[in-house]
Length: 217
Image (cartoon, rainbow, N blue to C red; front, side, top):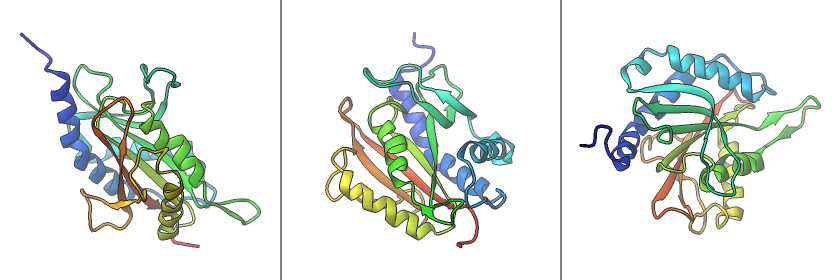
């Protein structure tokens, strides 16, 4: 008798929750205060996590929301990944979760210059999913970009440009584009990408939310 269910059943469960997670993040982001043009990543993520937990809709969903959790068993040769926010269904499997990795884009520095941070978005975010440091046993993950100068369209274009250059490394097919979201197709700030991972036959989807920190400057 199998009392906890097969692994594929738990993976299927988290797959069905992805639209709910994305909608919860989008709705909760609307309650966030404006961010400074050089806001730090960790305090922003901590405040978002608090508001996600406080959102009444989160109580209706069968998962817990945690911050700065660690993937205890990453793929061989990969370091443990410390994930920003995880949404874990209430099942006895620590490797079944939806990871939301948060990164800053378009940071305005003290000298007034803007730094896009797209390389960090890819290297310290997307590639960690592709290599199995994050979410190695599930089929979906998320990236939340804090677009600190408010110029979401520019940020999307910058990320799209680097994906075209690194699509092979990211396990993407040519030309390596940010596609419209299959979950939120009418929201121009939500995109998705599809990736092959060496250790899995399943296509992995990364759902990207580009969220303005405040009115564009």
